[in-house]
Length: 433
Image (cartoon, rainbow, N blue to C red; front, top):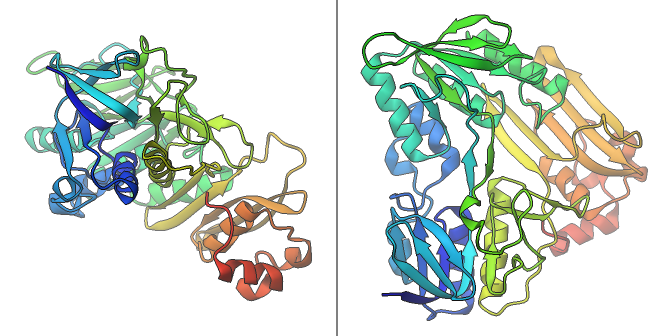
């Protein structure tokens, strides 16, 4: 028997929550059903490394209060997976064979970890690190096997947060990164070098330009992982292996739906897909990037929240448009605060200029990327003060000619900006990104 709802949401993270809240601001009565393959109440995924490392307890993980679903009159179906969409019948099929009908559908299935196909990858002790279940499974394995040596494949943000958690558990960690540096997708060489040196200070080995080609398990017992073999044939002892080489949009179940996909689900400025009444938001969708105007998967929390909100508004009859998001990452690594916004790779465009302050001995790096006298990107490490002002200058496309020479001075602030732009900031005007 088909269960019909006015609004159906697949997913239960930040985009789904934002969608629910946006719908309810306009439509207090329309029925909402939410389905998720995870069994948990909506939780904050960025906190899983703190949970693993023992910095927070499970009670701190939740993204909304326990009464969120009931307060918003949401029928939450947890622990069941959407496996098929039939746009003609306006139904979603779940893994138990049941069907959910909808008038408006929002897909926010997030990303799925990329796991390379290599010998031994199914050995006990090999994990990904993107969910609460991953955290629980890793913790249980560590305690059961008294793990003291770990290898993390991937030196991006997920890999480094996993590393921090393992170090907090007094586990020796080796990071393996195929690129020439850690955080290659987020930072340039100078920023990466500061974080890399801090990792080494706390006993973490970092190996770049290399990766795992084979996993060897113990020859007896439970076939637990014993060591990894690198592409240069070197062997590294490992009692646990965390695979953190990236995620891809979780859209495999949409193959027969007729929905247009590229890297992710292609959406317009209303967050609507190529299928009528079907919307998408978060890490599974490909939406407009602010600076280039081109479709791009930007798998970050603020983008997912904003996309979910706009999708919900339009599902409920609104007219809100998505103007695009900037790539943004703000995270503390090895006790060092960092932030990157916008265009940070200056190697691919000759027209880009850079103004920077580099003090590695003080763990400080501040870089501003400029195109045609407008800031298009920043990378700050160690000192991230006034990052919000710089981000505002990027999104508002402000010509910095009149204060360019002052842009990275210690006393740079609102007073340094043109009077008319300060009025603009006070009024709250501007584009949201």
